[in-house]
Structure formats: structure tokens, C-alpha cells
Length: 393
Ligand code: KG4
Ligand code: ZN
Image 1 (cartoon, rainbow, N blue to C red):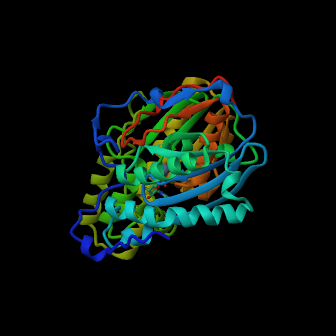
Image 2: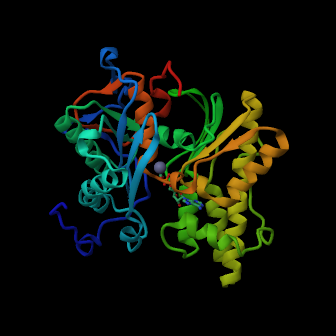
Image 3: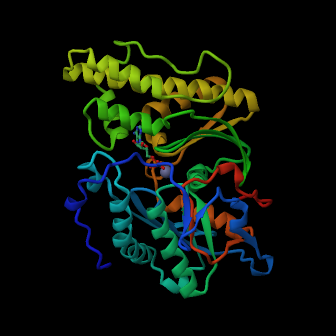
């Protein structure tokens, strides 16, 4: 156990933030860097290539400490997770400094627990994959430093993983693996992206949000309805008992062509509805249901367009909002109606976890990619800058 003690009380003055603020990219060399040419992270060392490996995956980009052991032959061996949700709840949002300190405290015990669950020793780890961005810079540096140190100590290769690539590939952890090409709807607290995926690393961004991410819209709307933190799952639960048709809500940017999103107007619309309402419990549930339906319809309309535009036959949904049951149901129904396949990860792999990082890292490591020994993490890191793999899973 780490000896660092975090007193949450004396950090009460910290302003809580939403999950993915815009921060500069920094390294432990203390340099503030320009946007990083991400391909430079990956060296190819074909003479170091392995065909079979057990990869330790580490995820610390925000408020979940996730660890997993992925075996390239046998699949997922074990995974462990600690969610900081209760720690941040009293501040109404994620406090970055508290997040970093708690990752320091939990990461090594979680790694030991994961090894124990898998019946493995540290020496059995063949390679380490860690989330290097995008996310909270201090939190990312914890996973980066621990991941690189384990790799150094064991003399094993390591790889920096893009958090959103982890989400995007998470459906591949399931028995029925989606096959390329497909369209991915990535909906998390920090991102809303529609991506055409030809193979690992071959990502074409079809559309993205111009303001709030879908998860952020859920969280902010939940907050203004007085539902606390974390908002998404609470609002979704409340919406189950509401009447989605009682109030009218816009479906933003659906009456013009294109695949971009905008959710901030919907949030303002909801605030005005709530302020001018009787603010009873049933009204709160009806507004939550109407808001959720508007987000679901908007996402579904754009997914439909993306599949028609790319002529893809397969849609995958990933990221925290992918855990929303109304969204899953609507996209599944649409798939049945239009004849395309719809896949998503199990609920626990929609939100942040170590398994998706171990899996994504494993694919790049198998293709011979490695990350050099510097400790670098990136608050921002464009997904379409990643190098493509020739070899597919
Ligand atoms: O992917 P994730 O765990 O972390 C990020 O990378 O951001 O996503 C977290 C987001 C939060 O905004 C959370 O409110 C939202 O996913 N979320 C949900 C649900 N579960 C999590 N939103 C709507 N319905 C849910 N059931
Ligand atoms: Zn995430």
C-alpha cells in the first residue's frame, strides 16, 4: 500500500471539473509541449516480435483505476477495478488532484489482486500497456509511471495506449467479435465521435460534438435537475419512471446534413423547462425521460446516416454512455430494421476499465509496436493520428 494519505476535506476549495478539461500536454521532463505527433510514440522493432503474450493493462485516465491481464491466446485472464465515484461525489465532479492521489494509492494493490485472480506471478507478465491519453494529466502520469517502471524492472516492452482506442476495441473482448470494417459510436464523458474503422489504427472521424460530449450532457443535465454525481446512470435510472412525451425536446443538428453533434442547446432547453416547471418528482422524471429520449434519438439518427454513408454493415457502440440501456435498445432495433449488425461490450467494459487497455495494447504489441522509455502522457491526443496496423486481429 502507498503511504500517501489524501485528506479530501482540505481539498474542498478545489473547483470540481468535468472529466476531460483542456490542459496542455506535459511530460515528466517538465516541458510543455505542442500537440504531439503521436506516431512518434511507437517504434517498430520486428526482431523483438512475440506471437503470444500476457499483457498487463493499466487505466488511470480519469476517476477509475483499472487493471487487467490479457492473454493473446487464452483471452482475458482477470481484471480489477476501483471506482472513485464516491470520493468525488461530495464535490459534484472529478477533482483531478484527488483522482491522481487515489490512483497512487490503489494501483499497486489492484495489480497484485489481478495477478492473484489470474494465478500469475509478476514474472509472467510479458508486456505492459498503459493509458497515456487523453484524460487528466496527473492521473495519466500515475499509470504511465507505474506501467513504465514495471516494464523497466521486468525488462519487458511497454506500449502507450490511446484511451478512446481502448473503448473502440472493447467490443472485441466479447465472444462474438465484430469484424472490420465497422462504424463506431464512441460516447463517453469527454468524447462523442462517429468513426469509420477499417482496421486497428485506421480511423476516419465522420462526426464529432461541437460542444458538450454526450456523457457530459447527461452529467450536466443531471446536476441541474439536482440529481448529483455521477449524473448519467442516475438520470437514466430516473428516466425509467418518466413520461418521455410530456415535454417536447429538440433533436439538435438532425434537420441538416452531416454527422456532427451539439448537446449544449439541449441542456439549456432542459434547464429552462425545469426552472419554469412545478419541480415535483414526477416532473423531474418526465424531464429526465424526455432528455434521454432526445439524446438517444439524435445519436440513432446520426448512426443511421453514418452507416448509409459508409455502406458499412456493422455498428459498434462504446464508451460510458454505451451503458445506457435505452440507447442500446434503440440502436439494436434500428439494426434489425435496416439489416446491420450492432455490437457493444458488456456493461462493465463500456465504462473505463483496464481490460480494454490490455486488449488494445496487446494488438499493437503483437504487431511489433513499442513505446520508448520516456514518461509521456497527453491530455489531448487526436484518435486519427494513431498509426495503422497492417495485421488485424
Ligand atoms: O467512458 P467513461 O467511463 O469515462 C470517460 O472516458 O469519460 O464514461 C463516463 C460517462 C459519464 O459521463 C457518465 O455519466 C456516462 O458515461 N454514463 C452514462 C451511463 N453510464 C455512464 N450515461 C448515460 N446512461 C448511463 N447508463
Ligand atoms: Zn472512457
